[in-house]
Image (cartoon, rainbow, N blue to C red):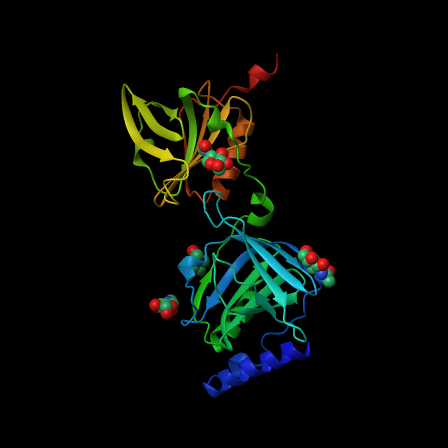
Length: 329
Ligand SMILES: *[C@@H]1O[C@H](CO)[C@@H](O)[C@H](O)[C@H]1NC(C)=O
Ligand SMILES: *[C@@H]1O[C@H](CO)[C@@H](O)[C@H](O)[C@H]1NC(C)=O
Ligand SMILES: *[C@@H]1O[C@H](CO)[C@@H](O)[C@H](O)[C@H]1NC(C)=O
Ligand SMILES: *[C@@H]1O[C@H](CO)[C@@H](O)[C@H](O)[C@H]1NC(C)=O
């Protein structure tokens, strides 16, 4: 506790000298994390960064984190959508002897020098703040729940501003992403088995962009065509309104298209295809089946998956809901 108090005192002192005395008084107060209790899943609620921080807000792309913490090591894995190449990325830290700080262990992927300190204003809230070059650089507030009480958030933000962490984002979660999304997507190797071309009836799609093609009032159907030659894939999204119209055509060669184009199928029920497609900044999750129909339970599950895919737009192809009575005999 001594070192933490010292840091907090120092932070407040610095802020006082910048002329905002009352803002920092008593901030932040908390308990050092109990190693037995801090490990596990946490939703990211807000981030505050110094304008001098190496990273800025648009680069903080995680939604929740899995923490593993003890007296000597602190590791966290960050998660967002399953197409992101940083999904599940690990950040390892080791305890700086004689202090409460943990030093980041640099890797080839991310060469960085910083230390981080964890504390908890409340057992269900976790705050991590980072120092680089002896300056507080950024702070992150996490919750076990989807949100934090307003007064906790306000005091975090106030403390942040006092410490020049003025680049602030608050994420307004409506869902407990850590609980809903962790482990929801499991990679499938199904695509490897494609021989020649396969056609799937599109049931629904979810994307991070609005697609006006799916907002039409006319009755339509849609399909996905997947072709494979050796390691190269072609995906076509085709909408049928009388005539066939190709909405998307994408070529993907495993290992050669970098991070910009990606194709990944996920495990699901038999005769169902759950396909993630990344094309530059466009991210799409397709739900397709052999019959062009799916049960209500599959559609409900897709809704959660769409959320965890960070897709704000969901489209259901008309007539794709399988009637329930087929199950009764
Ligand atoms: C955040 O920091 C960056 C980099 O210093 C700066 O360009 C940007 O204006 C800041 N944003 C806000 C909201 O202060
Ligand atoms: C802390 O965790 C690491 C990694 O899980 C483990 O190797 C180490 O033995 C643990 N240390 C203590 C003191 O529990
Ligand atoms: C969260 O809500 C606040 C207040 O409504 C808003 O100012 C802020 O931009 C929202 N944050 C995000 C990331 O959308
Ligand atoms: C791409 O290559 C990786 C590594 O070799 C493999 O695990 C994955 O299944 C491949 N994906 C496809 C779609 O062929």
